[in-house]
Image (tube, rainbow, N blue to C red; front, side):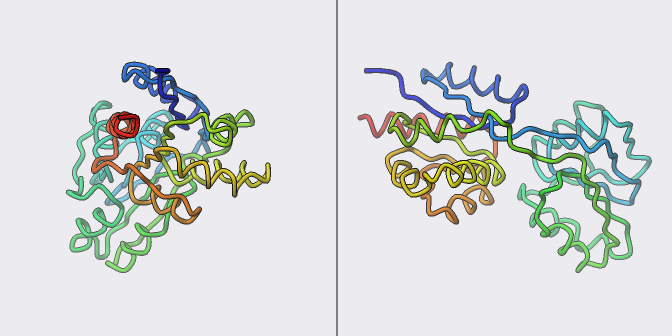
Length: 245
């Protein structure tokens, strides 16, 4: 029996290379199709009583452009973001028990009345943090550290799916879903793609990514309880093995 083929759509940087190696270690054939290019804005976070990071990428770009916490509390939405901060020598003052924007709002809501809050993230974040923290009485500012654009080379995974050659596919962010289906729409293949994905093990990281797929009428087969890529890959490969019997 041939190796299962699994599409991976991570950004076109070290993450896609790591994903390929990890999928190979699980005994599958990776189909790399980066759906995101990270474009830095060159901005850095403002000083504030609380500075919130929502991604490892945001941390890396902020540090690259000279950000220092300068006495304010440093907050991370999730474990990977917190690890990125600690690896660069920063103390993480606030890490919610629930690794979501809503979880962070709940963690901070009793503490931020009258405080300044800086949200340092991509240009594509939801308004959950801003709305929730403003309702808690904070003075909120947002700095866009990067944009997520679609590589000109993206689209291989759509062709493989339509041809019935994919056993699994890994969606790691809502923006990945958007770009995937934008390409399908441009190629007038949305309907056939949706049909073919019914025969594919579809994996998603996190509720926002799952929700994005559901809006495209795609059922999610695998959504791990944690947001790490490795767990997603492992669970999808296990799902494929179960299907194959």
